[in-house]
Structures are given as structure tokens and as C-alpha cells.
Image (cartoon, rainbow, N blue to C red; front, side, top):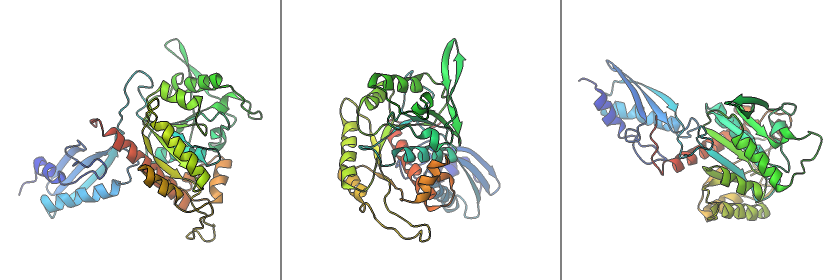
Length: 359
């Protein structure tokens, strides 16, 4: 029996993307089919390199070929990704997705989540930029070990642009780069807004799959300026399990849903979800309460994107300028990778609302 491309495509119509709820052929994800006897090779183009369903999709493709084409076929599935986008317009046209990281209150680890999210996405092959817009405590220079770095300036068509600092595969700009490291950043609203706009629109970011924006805690000028300056793909809310933090997280969700802002909330990350001592990594102690963000996510009908443990090494990693997700195969690294996959997954689902063909 001859194996043809048509038979392979018919077989792969039985494989559905778990998030987009359509088959891979209809979504245009199947590319470069090659047939040599019983050897079959093809490429599946995912919507993000951080897809948490990558291995499941690959196994389902292999099974579809042996079930519907030839049980003796030798199947090679190449998995790649082209990140989708819904963004249009002249502002940051080469940035596919802008993700705002916000919290209702300070001290919940929002910058730690931002730094590890950026690194996790970059580790999996995405092009990532991170803007540290927290005027009250810019911490990205410390977390990425670039405290003494300063952005260069590049002339493009007669106009000067900032060149982001790079660390661990992530392009970085921070309000902290423009202030003395030993002095407090005391800026009034208009000055802070001007600094954010400069980092957004007067920088040579190049092509990015994801731009992460670490916002100040609470609500204010910076938040309004961001959504007014660029179309934001979605917001991630960071909270701890404590009731006081959850109450403020609820307010943050409500802010992004206001008609004047109207930014989709991708979900909630619960930071410091539980404590695991290094000598007993399997044990979980719920110091600040249990599953508070889980219940809030259910109430607000938004996804819970991750539960990040409270472990000393996360703090230490930030202090020495090497985000914890880089500590491969540790519980905290795996938690951050799972969180990043879930966030990328929600971005892809949002972008599928308006059909975006995969190049």
C-alpha cells in the first residue's frame, strides 16, 4: 500500500490541539511531510516553544500514523514553534505579545515571577524582553547580575534608541539603570511615565515573541500609561495565599477588567504557596494559608497559572543574579517552567480568538 501525503494529512486530522480545540491540519500546524518507504517525517509547528502539551501532541501524531496509515511505519515528528500574535499597529510592531505582571500589593514576589518567567521562556527558545517598570523598587538589575551595566544608545535613521542589556538570553531595560544604585528612586508620576514610554518606544528591542512588563504594585499612572501606550496581550496577577494579599489581587483583576483598560487577565500565580525544607523537599507546609489563590481563581473564573514554593534558594538565586529557574531539575525550577508553559498556553488561546495563520 502506497503511503501518500494525503493519507498522512487525513490521519493527522484525528489529532486535536488540546488548547485550540481544532485538529492540527485545520490549524495549519503540519509542515514538511517527507516519505521514504515506511519512513515518515513531518514537522508540527506549535504556537509557542513553551507549549506544555508538546509531548502529548507528539505521541498522538505518532499513534495517528500507525493507526490510520501503516502500523509498521517509522514516524519522526519534528516539533518546532512559531509564536502567534494578535497585536497590530505601528507601536512595537516586531513584538508579538506583551504580558503585564501585576499585583494588588507589594511584597508578593512579583519581580521574582517576572524574572523567572522571562528566563523560562528564553530557555525554551522564545525571544524575550523584560521591562522593569517598578519605580518603587527596580530589582531586575540585581536579579540578572547587571547592576553595573548601562544601556548603550544606537542611532537608527537619525534617531537615538536605547539598546537593552542582555543576560541569560533575555533583553532587559529597567528604571534601575537610570538611577544611582545607592539612591532611592523618587520620581513623580509624569517622570515615571516618561521613563516607561522611553523603554517601550525609544528602545531597539528587535523581534520578540514575548515582552514581559514588571509593573509596580497596586494601581496607578504606570498601569494606565502602559495600556494607553501599547496593546497589551494580557495580564498575570501575582498573589500569596494570605487573605489580605488575595483581597488586593481581586482588586487588581477588577482594574484590568475596567472598560477604560480592558486587558484580558490570563490568570493568577500563587507565590509562596507552601514551604518545602531542603532536607525534606517532598514535604509541604502551608505557612500563609492553603490554596487561597486556587479558590480566588475559581471564583473569578480565571486560570490558576502556577503554585511557586517558598524555598530559600529562590531568594538566594535572585540575590546573586541567577534566577532560580536556571537551577535545572530542582522543584522550584520545575514549578517556574510549569508556570511559564501555562502562561504561554493562555497567550496562545487568547490569540486564537482571532485566527492568526502560522507562517
